[in-house]
Image (cartoon, rainbow, N blue to C red):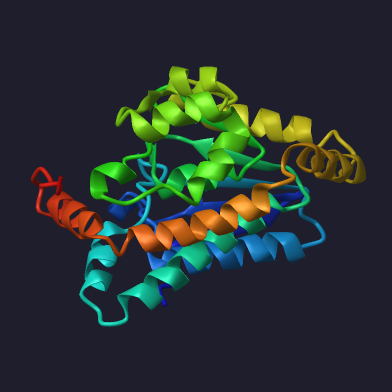
Length: 262
């Protein structure tokens, strides 16, 4: 396994997790997903952790799943079992990030797509550069955003989610803010200074009070979320087995328009 796809640090109660696969637009390969899962587990285990900050190196926050890796899997005789494991790993990552007892802050410096949207939606607070964009292009690849969908609906509601999921268009930073997906926008040059100010504000709260508040928030709004995420995991794995998925992934990697069956 690669050793440098995720960078973690803990200082003064702030546990930072940084995606470090900038050369691949921070696409979620199996190695990156496993390392992210390990990082979240470490954050949960550290008694000193008071806030978790999720960010990414480079100009793209996350381009979603590694489609080249998915295409390679399609040629394997046990592709179905591999895709099932892949979706389980992604599901478990989002669930563990969402269920952290401390506040979580996503810092979005650039475009966030597909599976990356799930990472952001699993966080409590989102600061974004005013040039960031959000997109769920899965249907264009013949697949679905089934694991992301429940968290997206949880954050913004069904109507804004339906636009992003079905229209084929992306949200600008301002559209994402209006939908409630981004809480605040700031110029890219000011993003880190605003992050520091927000962290300082979060840390003025008592750890026990913040933990109880977060638990109460989730109890009030997520009564069916675990079931929805589990169902989404199954839908996502099944969608990857279809002819449309094979055509969509091939077309994307070959830089051509897909030829959908009627």
